[in-house]
Image (tube, rainbow, N blue to C red):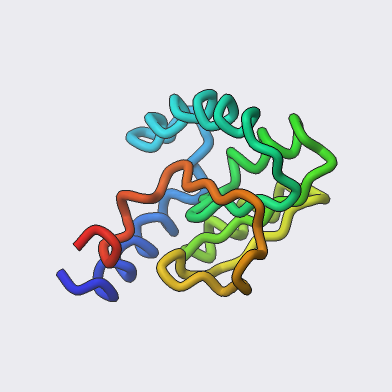
Length: 129
């Protein structure tokens, strides 16, 4: 499957899942939650002011991080507009959410002190092949 076709399928799938992604009816997406404590633990070792969550979905990691480190700035990037809409509904004052492609960051070099990819790396077909 070509990379652009895969991205279109991903947007279609995650548009349907956006509203339930963080609910108790998340289904297969529930498995992503088990990685959150490990990511938080690793970030405790890092000094950062500006963090990018690449493929942020509805921003569960940014929510946790903003609560733990309220003095930092967070940017969430996701290919699916519906996921970004869900993230924006959280009204996280120190976060910015952007619809965009993680294979082609829409940011200047050195914009972030840390970049995490908490639940989406396996979707980057262009990087895997």
